[in-house]
Length: 397
Image (cartoon, rainbow, N blue to C red; front, side, top):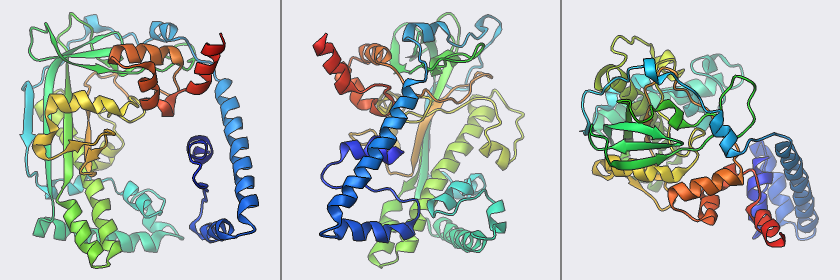
């Protein structure tokens, strides 16, 4: 469905074909290379993808969504009057440079590691799987061996920057202040709100709902971590030696260590830096299941799908001090890096914004200082309308 809805309509130099098993790629390649068979094959694929896309569009249209004003009226109503927000142990930023990788290994979530190699299953139960168990075990043993080399020979480094600031919500925005006077915002973080009609008693959420409005001494935190400083050089060294397996392994392990670093740092935030859960005693499996208080939502993920919000986050943290940069499309380099916010309210939880309507896009563009066209470009994956059709309807009216 993703291929039919997102890729196929935007790629016309050739034909994108989705297969759910690598063994089927041979037949697809043969059909695409056939002088006589290519044209009818491509026509059939495009016809099928058009059918899938139309069915998807009909399904989305049947979902009832609220005007943004009504969605805001149904925002989460927390009792801020009887809640005392915790204060962090410091304001501003702190750098954790050359962090011990050995400390991160116990925080690795191995299940996504196996998914990288198309071995699906939960760790450690995957080892008992009749089909993929032996391969998973062999892969895991190789990974642990390479992890020891990474640590012993210091193949690459991990670093982080973490910070805390006074903050308050203002509608769907979060105002971040440089000091406790809370006069002029140092940065404004913009959030998006769910517009799908909710069952009675369920709110239309935005991340700003979990931050107290003006008049309350609330705070937010933010972080950037990387475990990829030097990773590219090591991976390329293996690649130049025609050892693609080790090159891919290095990248997969760097990604897992970055996520482990984010988990470990969040634990230290809760127990030490922000200190609102000093008696927390969760095991690694419980940490991976995120059973603790507080969340660390990241720009580009379901609760805030706008990648450009990494911009003000990096402005607050000055993430380049630890060697992490944002590309023009707001991806992070090195790739084995993670960034996000810290929200501490006990009721803060992860959610998906889902599809949004044009009225929220127009409002968001105004708040961000964008044109509507620019907002539609950055928010394209979550639009519940076709911008071209919307323009055509406006012109006709």
